[in-house]
Amino acid sequence: FVGISIGCNKGLDAVNVMRMGSGNPIFDKFAWADAMSDLYVRGRFQGKVKLNQDVCNQATSPQFALPEKSVEEKNGPSPTSIASQMHCIEPMPVTIRALQRSAYKLQYNKMGFIVTHAAMSKEDGSVLFARGTNVGEENSGIGTTKCIRQNCMNV
Image 1 (cartoon, rainbow, N blue to C red):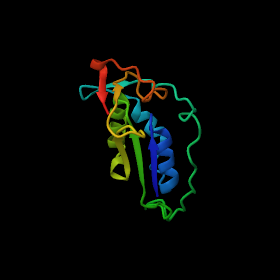
Image 2: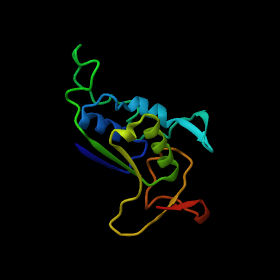
Image 3: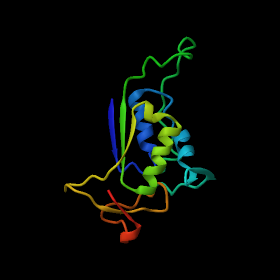
Image 4: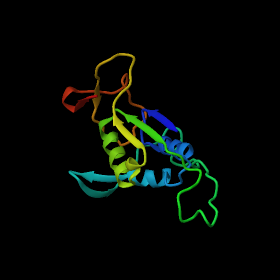
């Protein structure tokens, strides 16, 4: 299974798609949301923050249900789990840092969950994105980001 989420935002849909595509229950969007709310300043944990409001209620909708394991299977990998990759592509600088930290914290980065700092467009090259202040802001993009040169990053 290979999945791609362009404009990954908080990554909740990407984690849920990886759960569905891989059949692996380790991919849990509620554990992911908890990891995404960790606040770090200069590499030091400072507590929890409220994530920016999600547009489609991904944080509260149920995650993909997987078949229950039998008693014999409980101690080993799921027989239905398959080798998978999920590419989570996100341009917003403040959000990409949280996505990368979350993938590392939950070790999803070692299981095929790939977070990439990039933007997609019909044109080659790069574009300026505002660094942002709200992790997972979903209503900013190439055409809507309010970018003042000193508060921007080339993506």
